[in-house]
Image (cartoon, rainbow, N blue to C red; front, top):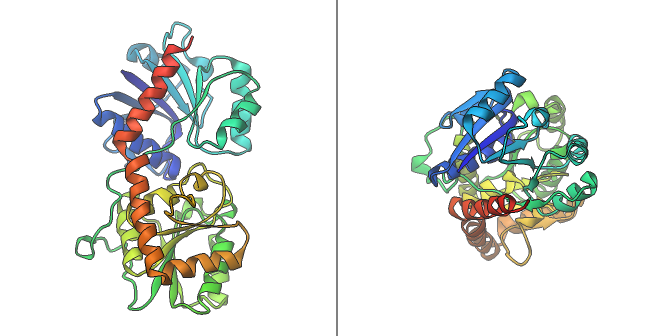
Length: 360
């Protein structure tokens, strides 16, 4: 089997790390998965173990497709080259939805009108009805979910070698924020919740983010420097994805947790990756993330988006209730191993491709 992935940009966000993890899992299973980017980004290091190219023109793209003899071409966050798939191509054309936005809505509308896409793959269940409604056409929609790279595991203190990883102060529990400093990641709510927690707990906020995609960074610095969290904030900044297991493990060792306050997500690497490292997660209760953290699984804590009091209570319980914390960590790792590791993901993904191939 041969698959060509066409992605918009070699960036550093969750879309890129998800793509990286999936291709490595497929290649390990003996499947040829090739990668083509439309634009170069600052996350090219993520794909150093994956052969990849950048499309130069319509003719260049068509040449790659014709010479590659691919069974499937999957477009991710870009529809630009779908119209240029050669008319002689006999395989299946897929489009992947990894989150929801105005831009994705427009992409789905185009796909419904174009008629060249054979199936849509969504990263989360909640996206399925949204896609169907926007396409207004009976194109099959499947959920492939995600896989977490094997490097995400707890890293003992003796194995943490990077100078980028802060050393928690004695007796201080770290609360981690991972993602862009912008409106959707809801950093203001994170600060408000931590401020409330700090009234009774000895904590420190750790911010891991990429400066180039964090338009609110200066505002964050201003808010933290003038408020009660002035001496309880660490701006860790950019940490390569390969070192994030050390970051998550250091936060866990401090007795802290990961707090994700985002307004909108696809599925949420900000939940999956720390969970795989044994770091307990407190999350806003929004679609996507609440497909990973569920009350039945007892693998994390959800709080109503915008409710600072309940968010703070959930964090304090995670810091202080030893039995609850132990249960969440154990069930979190169980969730990852059962639903989000490579072997299970590859089997699920190949079953979806088989259904798409069978459909006429």
